[in-house]
Image 1: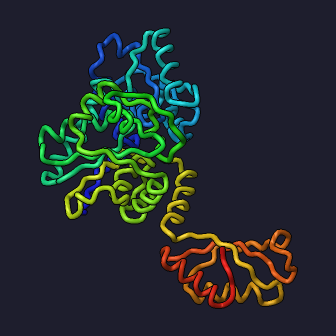
Image 2: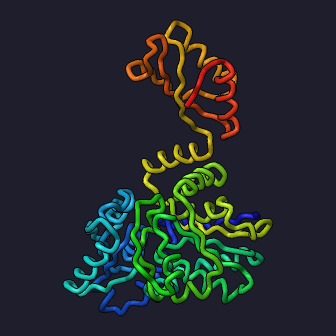
Length: 366
C-alpha cells in the first residue's frame, strides 16, 4: 500500500477530539457557556473539552473512569477542568456525569454521539479529501463511532468512490456487534491497549450515520496493536496510543488484501499514551515481531557451561539481554543447571537459527 498518515496525534491535546469539542462549545447559548459543560470520557474527550473550554471561556467538568491513564487525568487538571473519577467502566462515569449535570445545570456534551461533536470530527474527513485528493481508502478507528460517523459522511459526500474501513480492538468490538444486531447493543468489554476505543455501546446517532457510509469493519488483536505502535515509533518516528495504532494494525493483519497497491490514509487519532505503558508496549511489540525472545536451556553446571552457551548465542548473531540461573528447580541431574535466557534477534527466522545452532551443539531449549 501507499500509506498516508493523518497526524491528529499532533493536535494540541494529542487527539482529534478537539475538533468536536470546539464545535460543540462554540454553538452553546451565552447563558449555557457561562454555566459550563460536563462530559464523561476515558481521557481524550475530557482533555479536548478542558482545553477548548479554557480557550472559549466555558467552565468544564469531566468525569473519568478510575482506569483512565494518569497522563490524561493530569493533563485535564492542568488545563483547568474539574476532574471527577468515578466507576470502573465508561458507563459508570457517564451515569455520574448525567447526575452532576442535572444537579448543577451543566450541559452534557456526549463525547461521540452529540450531533455537534460528530460534525466537528468530520472536519478530519474534509482535510483528508483536500490533502490527498486521489486516495482510495481511509481506515478509521471506532469506539463510540463519532469519528467514524463524521469522517465517513464527509468522505462519502466528497469522494464516494473511496472506501471507508472501520477498525476495532477485539476486546471492545461494539461497532461490529451493532452491525450484526442492526442497532447499538451493549457488549462486555475487556482491558485493551486501545483504551480510547473502550466503549461498550456505540452511539445511536453515530451508528445511524456510520453504518450507511462504512464499507467494511475489521477487528485487530492486542498483539497486532502492540506491533503497530512499535512500527509507528520506528518508521514514522511518532508516538501514538493504542487506538491510533489500530488502522496500521488492520493493514498488517492481512484482512485488507483488496487495498494492495492502493493509496490508503491511516487516521492516527491520538498520541496520549502513558510513557510507562509505552515502554511495556514496545517490548511487547518486539516480542510479537520475533525480535525479543525468552527460552530455557539445560547446560552443564561445571566450569565453562555458561560460557559455551553464550558463545554459541553470540556466534549465531544474537544479543543476550538477560541470563538467570535456576539450580533448585532444574532437574534431578545435579550436574546440570537450567538457564533462562532473554535474547534479541533480528526476527523469528533468526530466532530459529539460534535454536538450531544450540541444538546442534547439544543444548536443548524450550
